[in-house]
Length: 177
Image (cartoon, rainbow, N blue to C red; front, side):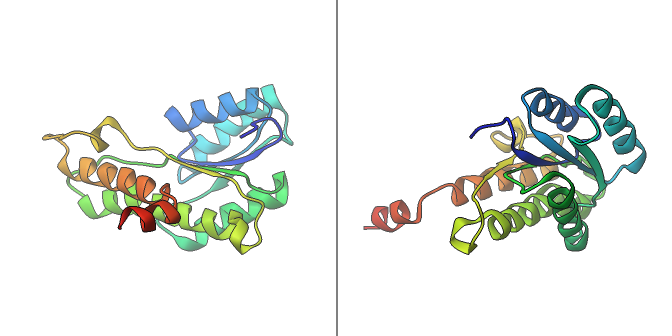
């Protein structure tokens, strides 16, 4: 995939890895929609990024990845202001063992919501221009994590979702015989 000229949505991009992804992609010539539930941090991050990369190349959109309407609005706003989306990075995530349902909703639900929306909007079979979805997991998605079993379960699920969607249907069909 060519990064220069691409339009990217990154969830959970107000800080941390998401922010680093945004800065790296902007430096390579992409346009970035920073989507995050934290409006204050997201606005501040975008103001800083706009100073280096220009106001027309990066925007902030408030997005709670657990809500369909928020994800749709982020996609629509990103496309309207930056152009056709060609890359989605599902990065939003939390680690909260006490509120296990929210951890599942954000880490797995947000990733599934974004991936399925991207397939609908970018899918060539549905009239889209194609694109790439990157789902961010963790080492906790590959090995046991005794101090964070709910977090690990969600990250294992993200790996399973990504691997399952990444397999060619033809290969799946042929390997069943």
